[in-house]
Image (tube, rainbow, N blue to C red; front, side):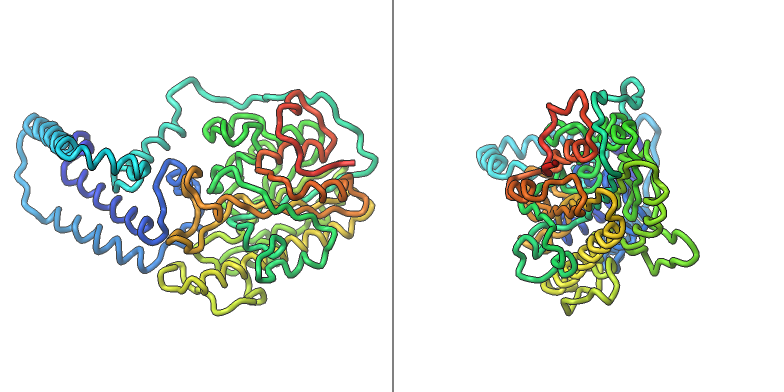
Length: 469
């Protein structure tokens, strides 16, 4: 009724029906909640991610519960009246509807109050009211009704300790990898087939994400804000740790095979590897994450100083887990070969997901093998996933639930560190501290310390999860 005050009644009802149809499919199929973060994810996704969700089930659901009712609505005869009568009718109808809702609550207030207290989050399932509300919230975030925001530095570099040898570090940002499906963390399946060849790798078993979606976790992990105070609307305009490294003289390169850097790499070198980078490398359907390593030898050799290379993976992004790897890595079978997860058993879904983890492990190992060729430098590979994933536990799938009641499968992420023989990382002390609890908040200070940089806010940042010599 509120929509009908600003557009024709038929159009308002049509928009509501179509929104409810789309939302109900994802809510029923994947247990998705359409809060402002999920709406942000929808607007910031790319074609590859969106195509995974365009299933026959979605089309059929939208046709039956959306398109058909809308067609019937527009075929009904409708007598037009004067403008004033139409506006007055809509306002009156909206008032009556609101009065009826309030009356029903008052009449049965005892039960309603008790139910509301026991189920405080019930409002997030109101369809299509909550998706409309969340879209409005998202619009407020991206269209701030205040003075224009602009980029500004929030810290000063107080010291850059001279490094005896060139530092070359590859930071891999994983996608949708959950900690309990890494054999390094005790998973009963061998999903770390490749990195298990490196006993010098240090694994962090208690690492937690800043958010449950890429659009929040990625900017948060590089921000100087901590998780509790993080504001995704301000982050693009504030200096992040990559900006600081670049100002200090570190060559920072962001290579992306996902849906972008979420504004983290706006002011450093950004390279898109989600499409073929040259004629010799043809991506079949989508580019594999190993494409991110293309030409890194030349980049490292041509750099004059310290280098930080960020590789943003496609990783294990669902629901089409089977598309994230080549058949060479199909260790666990049978696999779910559909984006329509309801057509697969949970075991098939997990098999496909675990195979994608094996492929991620391969990419990590290939990064290590690449840096082993540069043993004259201080070399490091750091891997951290952005968030986890639900694979059907308690009827939940994918990720993106509000952090407050998201399961640990969406927040507990894998993290590991490999260091070369001439690295400035103290393996013994870092290994000793690896059982401590860390979060994405610990990354900023880790990167600053890795390159010997001190800033005015260094003492305020959470400690590094790596110990340096």
